[in-house]
Image (cartoon, rainbow, N blue to C red; front, side):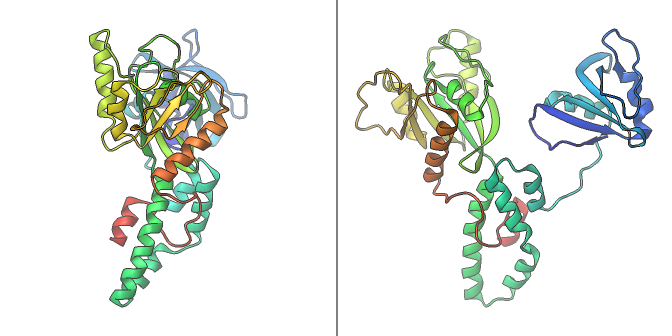
Length: 331
């Protein structure tokens, strides 16, 4: 069994089963009426229910590739893939060079540019050559490549970006706009967000694991209190974006949270704004309700890039580490 789609959270996952695995897979595929299904090479995909250990795990499409085997098109849920992994055995994926992995998994044009640049360079040869340089020249060269690597790795490894703030400040609305889709529920009722929700996206060329958390405020129940605490734990070693209701102005709690935030965003700029305290930063004023998502993403991404002291994403101008292993080689 091989995973044909890139690993990670996705809407759809495609898994290929070899011809030798057909006898084991066949009993796991049933029609919606519980009958065994028959597939024909080259025929249109067949709908089936995937049953593992007597339980229906997913509603799938089955594609018969003849001698190659069968493809299952499933929901890309981690839980579905984990259930498959328990019932079958995933073939080990080949170990690909970091630049090839980036080329395959790139989420934006700048990541593609970086991958293409690094594919044309020889990291192994660079390591051999720099080791032969005199100490002073070696130190200079390694200082330059470490800076390039800082920028390159920031384009490869998603930084955790936690949205925090009071209930109804607009965190979930901002989360949805950054993802270009309605990923989480939004509305006027407080406490709609409980469990933290995380998704990976690219902002201004740099990848982020954006996390929507429960709003700070009175906990109506033990469940709400636990949700708030889970969000707080995720802030450790993360970039924090404080979302404030600009129509009401920052609260005492907002002022306390601002100290750990790299960005303070005043939301609801389409509504009348109250005075902003002079001793509290406000990096951006936005309107999640009225502003175009593409412009909002660009503004947030540019502000984050400035906070992180990063240049425009893309090529870095020479050899750079694209993985923790390569960075360790340089060290």
